[in-house]
Length: 385
Image (cartoon, rainbow, N blue to C red):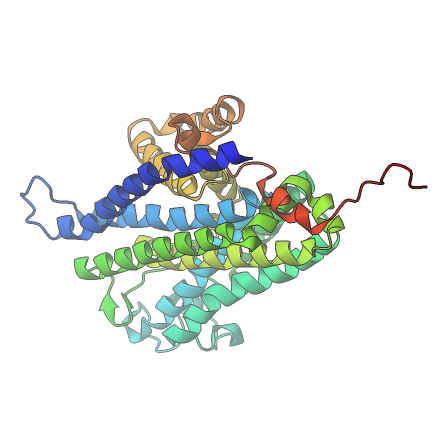
């Protein structure tokens, strides 16, 4: 296994330089937005919000790569955790409106007044405080993932069966949140946000602030995932991906490892959704659509599964193409997306990073080989009975 490790070390300086350049470009976006509008390098407020969305998508892609690329858990419901984080932040933003709403009710959001609600539901309590909302951003997706994962992994549900039930989970949430009596705005969702922590969302300075928060979240998420995958924990996850039954035979609690990484990925997805909601100005049940979760998996596959910077690259590349195609030839986008996934699956299993020679997934067997020394095999000596 020395050859894959040596090749990774050889390309490490190139990867580091490219990542530094990409980070520098992303950090320059707010500065370019502050230039005079007639400057050749000026970036509009729309562009800041657009790239900010890509940053949130990149965080979501990292959460998927952590469980799929390194642990072999193909979840088709990651968009559910993303949307729950968005709703948690949206509830805080709705409570912050107060008497500035259409109906000027100091407590009830406009949609509740319109639907003739008499009092605020109990599960809305506390969302007038940012700290509580921030806690719910990670706690709600985390608790849901913990409960769901405990039932699934304890029953040893894997492969396509796990993918199907995760997709069923997000579809069930889609149907539930569409109901007006759920108290989340029905099919319209939560919208018409005014400010965040007292800063008006329609100001350029606020947009730049949320953009920088999204960039910090991306860097922090990447650092956390990199630390996990480079540690002994990461080697165990890779071993589970490659040979789950053998890892279980070695004495490791496979269920506990899977449950930990699945819950952590859900919390990361919730953070991405919370940063997404104030930038786009709305969060509604359509974000629960199973198609969105499948599309996020495609980002990781296109970028390169099992390579963290590949997930980031895939999120930016696919969504950049989507922005361009949906504005020029919108009727072709779904065909392009489907064709892209087929091409990557058949011809480019290592994704874009494998195509350009910058990686291609954690080497198979690397994690298991690091764990095998725990077993000592004694060969019988000649003459032993």
